Amino acid sequence: MSEQAVGIAARLRLQRDEFVLDVDMRLPGSGVCVLFGRSGCGKTSLLRAIAGLERAEGVLEFRGQRWQDRYSFRPPHLRPLGYVFQEASLFAHLDVMGNLAFGYQRVPPAQRRIVLDEAISLLGLDNLLQRNAQTLSGGQRQRVAIARALLTSPQLLLLDEPLASLDGPSKAEILPYLERVRDELALPMIYVTHAPEEVARLADQLILLENGRIQAYGTLNQLLTAPDLPLAHLDDAAAVLPARVLGHDAHYALSELAVPGGSLWIAGCQLAQGSATRVRILARDVSLALQPSPGSSILNSLPAQLVDLSADRDPANLLARLELRAEGQPSQSILARLTRRSADRLALQVGMRVHAQIKAVALMR
Amino acid sequence: MSGEDLGAIWLTLKLATVVTLLLLLFCTPLAWWLARTRSAWKAPVGALVAMPLILPPTVIGFYLLLFMGPQGPLGQLSDWLGIGLLPFTFSGLVIASMVYSLPFVVQPLQTAFEQIGQRPLEVAATLRASPWDSFRHVVLPLARPGFFTASVLGFAHTVGEFGVVLMIGGSIPGQTKVISVQIYDHVEAMQYGNAHLLSAVLLAFSFVVLLLLHRYRKGHLHV
Image 1 (cartoon, each protein chain N blue to C red):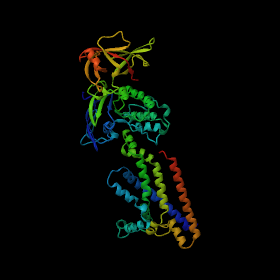
Image 2 (cartoon, each protein chain N blue to C red):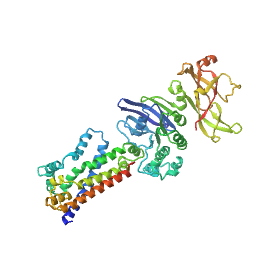
Image 3 (cartoon, each protein chain N blue to C red):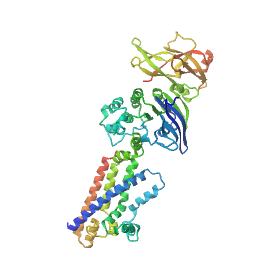
Image 4 (cartoon, chains in turn blue, cyan):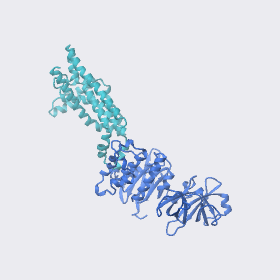
């Protein structure tokens, strides 16, 4: 990573009773980096240490600015970041507009890169401005909290499980807003969660934390499909691929999406032609064939190379990692879960060219 | 009501107002420290603050008398400063009343600060507010019910004191003769009618204060 591309360089250590957080990481200065791990693994502590809310030992630099080292500690209010807490934590003595204006007013006008109207429309708050924080639903409150953080024109947005305390419908309500924030503002984000759904929809990079240490760091696709990491062996193990809408077929009510190495037909896609999205493919929905099989009812098949074949949790199964090649793009992988018996019957060998037959594709939006 | 009675009422209101204002100034940082510190001093300081709740007023008055007297440290200081000795003056009465009413102001403030918790301050910090800015614009407005309760209790408690006043202030009209002392003097002089009148005023006052406090707390239940 070049110096310019590095957003955060951190070597931090934090001890709380039995628990030790000890990380050494360099994150890019753009995109969404998800901190993923079980509860108690130190995700929130790490985020709070980056914000300066928790005083860890070590060195922390953001875009070349030193935020802390052995001799200095820049307090949170002097770090140009936004923070969204798990509970929206709106100020009870202020209405929605007062909450939004709180941080906005404290940023010198010359440093403002997002104005009130922009944040209000981005998070859909027009009708809530005069409301008291207590009269809002959980989802509305969290939208106000996100807008409030954005209005400080942060150079880095930290989000600590912003959806964890919400019910299912509220989660579904907020995710599109978060995607808009990601897509419309060039703002690096660090997002803490333990929900795979949020990882699949939002993450560009992924950091796996375990017992206060970084277990793995990489792009979303790399880590989801890495056979030596636990994610690939979950029941719902899945790969996420970038996709672009090529067109819609009204007759069959299907849409064609370009993905690395080919295209996929899916139903129920409302997105405009040309728009970028993501698709998720579960390992258990992929089967392998040595030849393209025109005699099958399976709609989607992608040519791929078998790059790894390893034991899965269930002794009857193997997990195959398949690389999809695309000209001029970094290669992406998908997973296939198959029985050991099938693998032997096909005499699968690492390096073989195969056809991934995909029974189901979920559109991540 | 005699002129002396009215004078006692006026003096009492003046004393209670001065004491309440000074206590709010002094107790806000103290209560903030008590609410937030993890220091080992928290428990002893908290106990010291609460002492006037259980000590007999005469005991407080006695020690304050020694403290402010010619041999006491405060007495020597005030003498050296050219103020003279504090016992049996209005200033002495203010200091004594502050000690006596201290817990009634510190404790509601401390509770209010504790209820606010850490989170609003963290939010304010991530919204670029310095610690002082956060205190002014987040803590103070959120703690308003606590300030109201503290003011009312501090004021009312000062109005009602007797033992400490008697020890420190005596009964100099216009200087230290507050309502409760005036009532005592009336009773001593067998002027039961006058005593009744002043007592009824205090009784009504206490009732109204408690009623207001109750109303206000109900209105701010979810703050």
